[in-house]
Image 1 (cartoon, rainbow, N blue to C red):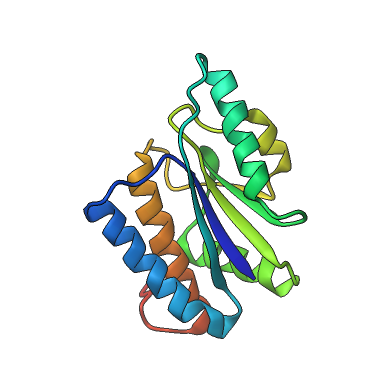
Image 2 (cartoon, rainbow, N blue to C red):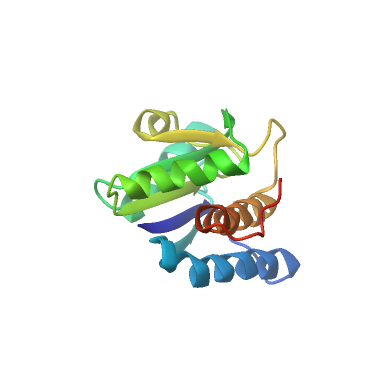
Length: 160
């Protein structure tokens, strides 16, 4: 299954970008052995619209252009379901085992995600109830993708 990340906002060169890249590289190297591959990392600039509703709608349209038809959509939202690492790995493994070809994980901008995406999403998850800057969310989700691969493959990286 090909996994893509979609993020509103761009990471500037620095330690956050380096750390996210390190975990995505680990995921890209370890994932194919268990049927998970890093397909793409799409960064889009924040909409310049004058109000939050229009910005979110424009950002959702940018997501629609990159999300493969028929693909699984997971959105990150503080009101989503909190999963532990094993449940996140099981979620990914379940979609893979159902024969799903493409999966996109969407990280919204400062205003959040357009309401229309909640109806289209196959899962809405949170990384905790706190609000995180998108730079840290990228690192957290990149690490969890790598951790999911290690859990699904029985690698000792994840310790309980």
